[in-house]
Length: 183
Image 1 (cartoon, rainbow, N blue to C red):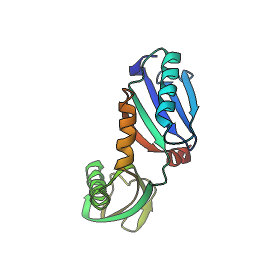
Image 2 (image 1 turned 90 degrees about the vertical axis):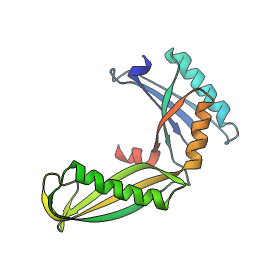
Image 3 (image 1 turned 60 degrees about the vertical axis):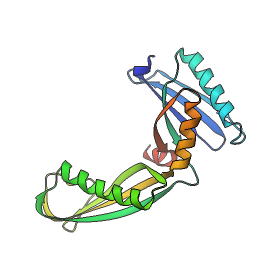
Image 4 (image 1 turned 90 degrees about the horizontal axis):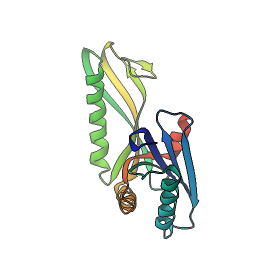
C-alpha cells in the first residue's frame, strides 16, 4: 500500500480507538487495529501506540486520517429554507446558492461550531415533495429541508492538535452515528 492509494480512518469510540487503513484499489486489502483507553488523560499515549502498531504492520507512515466520533456536545439543527424562483429552471447553480444561504445562516448563529455534515433531506417544488433535489424542472417556489450536524470548534482543534503532535493531518470529521445509519 502507498499513501496515495490508502484511506485511513480513526473511530473514537467511548472506550476504544479503532484505526482502519483501506487500499482504494484492492477491495480486500485492509488493516484494522484497535486500542482501549480508560480516560481522556491516556488517549494520547493510546493513540501513539495505535499509530505505531499500524505503521509497523502496513510498513508505511500514516500522513492523513479522517476522524469518526460521537460526542455529547455535537448536535443537529434542522432548517427549512424557501426561495421564490419565479419560473426559473432548477439547476446545480441555483441549489448550491440556496444551500450556501442556509449554511451561512447556521454559521452565523452557531459560530463556535463547525458543520461536519449537511444533508438535504427533502425538497418541495410548488407544493410537490421530492426525496431528491428536483433538477431541470421549472417552478415558482422551492423549499429545501436541510439537516446540519455540528461539532464544537474547540473539540476539532484539540483533536487536530493531538494528531499534529503525531505528525498526522486530519482531513475530515464525521459523526459516527450518522455514518453508521447509512449502512
